[in-house]
Length: 396
Image 1 (tube, helix red, strand yellow):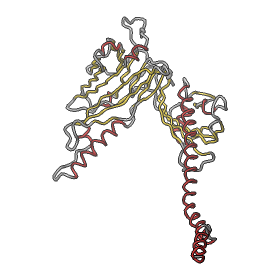
Image 2: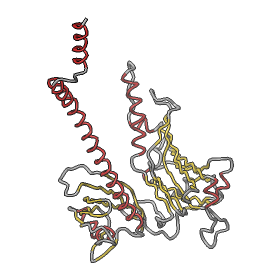
Image 3: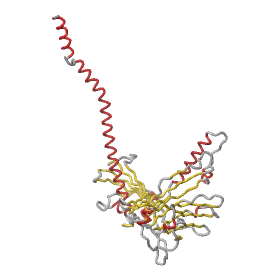
Image 4: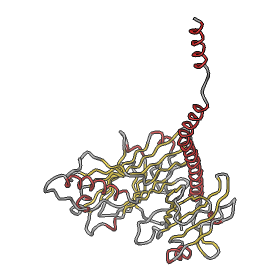
């Protein structure tokens, strides 16, 4: 009996004796092996969070610089014998202290004529941190040039400038891809050429105008929707929605300028459809006014439709239809202006006023703006932390 109790006591002591040194060492080794990848994971997470925070600050800076340029009534100015952008080259707080540079004929034209390409770069130190700023400005021939459609002067504080870039090319690629996929899986089918697909494309130019009561701002979005019927492999109900030609918010709204490429001619004719969606909230906030002292009709805003009509094949009959959404678009009271002249025609179903782009014209310079933010002291070929691209219209 005594031996039995003693054995039980030794067994209990052994169970309650804790871990041996060897067990503790083994546990520590196992823990270390597990902790190394976990530690790397947490360190990577911290580095990623820091990088994202850095990119966010860079994006805020890029937007700040871009908005400062857009707010200038005239971004590119003739100063001290050359054209430059004072808001970029002036020292703080009036500017960003950037240096203008470039090479070749494009840079020389920028300096001498205000049309060409120039690079503005320099270091920045401020509330957003330390970065390198790089801004590329590219300007074209003022639009009153005989080779370009005429445009009235643009006021960036209350006018919207929507310029087509590669939206139609993206739509063409979308439908050609569907056609090529179909032909690759269908015996004897031959893909259509780009021109053949383009002839089947039907585009609507959307101009959406709304008013946000929360911040009392107008929102204007300009974009395309494109359908393509009669092309093998393309569903006739399939619709391509383009990127925005313009997506802006304004305290005031007076005019919207849409500069676009005309639809390709088919059997000697070409038609474009413009659809204006002017919300009731926007109509309420847009004041009525007379565009000119001789006018008999008041309008809420002007819509300028400027197509490259001169680039259509000779003899093409071109028509642009301006329509509105809702039950009564005729109540929009929008003045529609176009560079389309007889025998071509403009069908205006928005309001009661239609005016051609004639009379005294102030030329408009289009400025392409690319703002890039890099790490401070960045090297050649290094990727930008943030990039903002926009277009600004101004009088030269």
